[in-house]
Image (tube, rainbow, N blue to C red):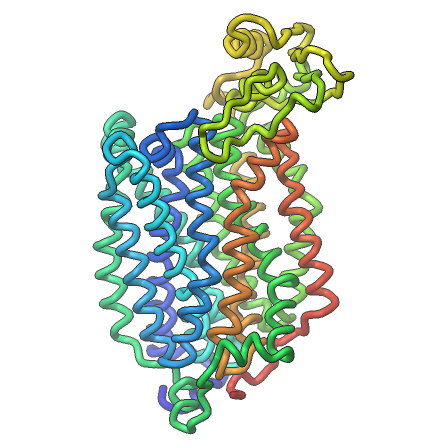
Length: 542
């Protein structure tokens, strides 16, 4: 592929070189997402070993925040590697990012826990997450642009949609591998040391990915631009220092990537956390159902990418934002109904109410693990949060002693061993300690999870082509990468921790859904008004 004519492409069968471009780019990106998401999937074990100095519920939030740290630095990785991609090329930049990702993942698998290293253990864990986040900040843009710049003009949505499957396939791969190892080893051995194996296997995946990608040639559009002396010497300044380009990046962030991110992480990652942490579905059972839904939903990435070449990128993505905003509450309530009917019954029959002076109630998140929340209200709420019990707040006059009402039973905050008394009352009123696997309606639960995945495919399938077409070739890597990774790194990456924090603050297991719903609505409005349709644009312009 040495000419721009080939890069523009003509309608017809996909060439062997184009197939190799898609396969190599997609496979390498699958491995990077696998590396990134085994952390999230194994968050419970990481909390246990690296945040052992705090209560389990707080440790899990810490593990989520460490997970989010990798997302926090993704925009910085986008700046660093986006600039490199516009200066030295697409191919060599994503070879660098892949190597960094593999190294960071491998060393997480070797890292001793808190019992051995003390506070240094979580510090090093977060450091490796930061390396992963920086690497991922440069990977996606390179792969998406590389494929798009090889694609025929009328098939960019279809070609790049294969890249869009990689995040879901990476999660699917992580889930299957973890399930297989857990099954072979047994829960005890896996919990003690087997959870490290998926991290260590990344070394093998790294070697395979680098070997495959070394076979690729540089993008023909980039080669032509360099040969003509039209490459940007200051891509970051040009992309974000000039308003005509900066406003495109801003609109792309608010009108596309932010909404795409919350639908993606809400529909796939938070759904897994909701099943395991809130509904108390056994981890293996939840992972199997998520894996099935991913397998059923993933082909829709290709379908919506293909469809976007015919009707446009914009209407499909806007429809995905709208559907998510309109149906998230119903779908997650449906998950409770079908995955843990005993919990739904207990919520209806024996609602829990906390009555207290608001001045005595603190936000139930300990930022350092050393804070002491000792008021009656705090003790009650801490017990309920640790039990994942839904509750409502009733404001009492100043000085009123705190109490909790579970069904018809009232428990004052000054009751001896109040946490144990609350746990016993919760159990006696039908709140299950865990979901009964024999009561789960598997077909309906998987159906709802698949619907969430299809929403993901609607917003994610066309977005690579849309972003590529928004920016000129000379600053495409920089211009595309930053809004994409701010959207996905910050709006999406912080979603699980944000949603759980909202739930802890309000006591309502569904209240955290307002976060993805509000962001999706914002992107619908901004995208509708300010972002153009781009499917017929000529991307060869420098």
